[in-house]
Length: 282
Ligand code: PMP
Image (cartoon, rainbow, N blue to C red; front, side):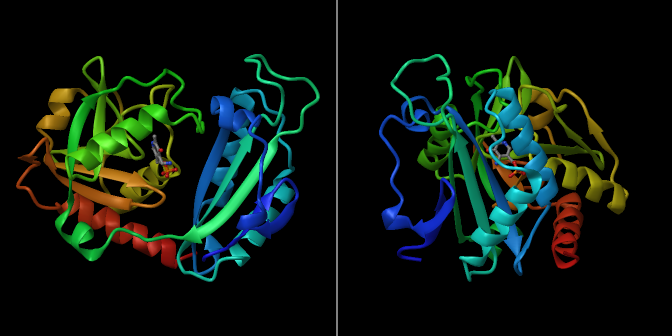
């Protein structure tokens, strides 16, 4: 993995040869979008949903999709083949391209497309079996969180806030309601029922959002998508976080206080097992 093969603007090249201009708008403005797809045993997990979301993100920021669906699929397959590690993830990002620095969109500029496959280190046994900690913070990000933008400063600051507190994640609230964590969606379980904030502009609709909703149905866990108050989060029986790289984890402490009985609960165990089965079924 010292010098992996990466994709840059139409070719697979060694990382050390992959160079972009300092005038790339991704560098100057964070003017781009991205995706991260987990790959198990060489098979991408929910690729179609990731490509749908990439299309939505590109449309939202008005970058013409540089590739057809078939070209994206082929690109993911080619990138995946560059990485022998199992599991691995494939990262792609599209920026508005290179142009003299000016805020408005340049005309006639081709987007920059970059991609790389890297080993995916899933949460270790300790985290899966005993859960993780989280802290809370007011959500100070912009109101276009549904766009999977490379402008991640708000998320970066919240990820570091968690790291500074030696916990896994920062769970954010906006106006007294749960939004999401720095790089995960958040699920609240109370009385055997599961709740998550509605999919709107205040959260990124994780691909695991749909996955967990499906798995909950399979497991006979009632799930409702609705506004979730801060008080509900703080009095939850169980709290879960999900993302491509974390899969499903139980949050067992929040701001240093135990969540429920302070151990991963039955809903976590059921959904974690179902998630592993969904991977096996690929
Ligand atoms: N919210 C944010 C802000 C994220 O960065 C992520 C991770 N990409 C998620 C939610 C979860 O999304 P997914 O399940 O697609 O990884």
